[in-house]
Image 1 (tube, rainbow, N blue to C red):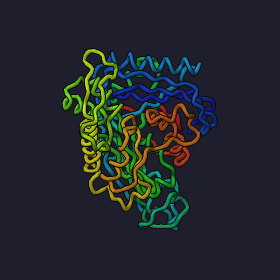
Image 2 (image 1 turned 180 degrees about the vertical axis):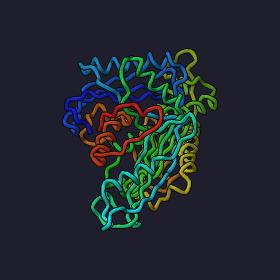
Image 3 (image 1 turned 90 degrees about the vertical axis):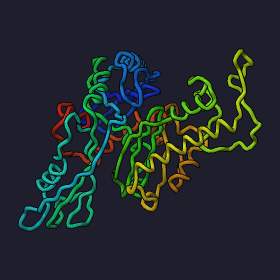
Length: 403
């Protein structure tokens, strides 16, 4: 929750395919107005991780400058999306006995159990990104807020997300080179999930897949809360690379064919139907069977989705995912991908839609993460106005905007 009115807060996603920056003016802790947008092609980033610092800085700083110029204002601070295969998570729980003589839960009981549930040490070289609280349980029954309720035993669990300290630091330094302070990190999957699902949909259970160029981020909700999150180092470039190999074309040509004729499921039945590479009859222009393009992209799409399901393992159960599968990210634009996801997960699947407050020009899936950063922060502040402070890690000194 932002206590200072009129803060100018930037949301930044440093992705494999693009750098997206939004400048938002947040007043009275709840009201958001997007006043600037910056978008640039990404360089120096692979699978969501910085591999060429100078190139990543140039691309990111270009997007930051563009966003501030359009906003006509300097950002006070940045919220930065986090993704990459180095991210991991685990569940941790704690239990305390209610201390009061009449067994009424007080704030001290709540703070104690929350602190205990977050105290598990991380391996060397790892830093905490999020501690996501799950429902409290009082004598075994789930309660949203146990304060002033009567019981003898109070339990709580957290989903702890952590990352490789050096890789997290690389992202922070890229933005820091523009002389902006990163105040908070937000997991990309949580940002997209917060934007594209409603409270009711999360309560029914939902799976959100953000399929970008280099990685696929996912978050699984059950009973209104985050059950698990994850990042896979595969995305839309997986399809592009296979097209390049299968059709013997360059990566750039394969990307063009994917965007024009690729599908998540095979639709073309006439194997003699062909499409042109360029369509301008220029030197080197040639034809390819449309069915072959669809077959390659459909096979790789199916493989990607099956890897996600395997990664979820026993945590994913269709009967606990009543709201279905929500798809976003650039690769979610692939025709037929909803049908492919429906087959793999045995649920209804659809492309996630931004809420009504989002302007039309920002409803493209490429903006789901940066928009979701604001949504996640404002929602988290509203639902948990007095969070227990985390203690250790690289980010322990970062001041919070939403506090």
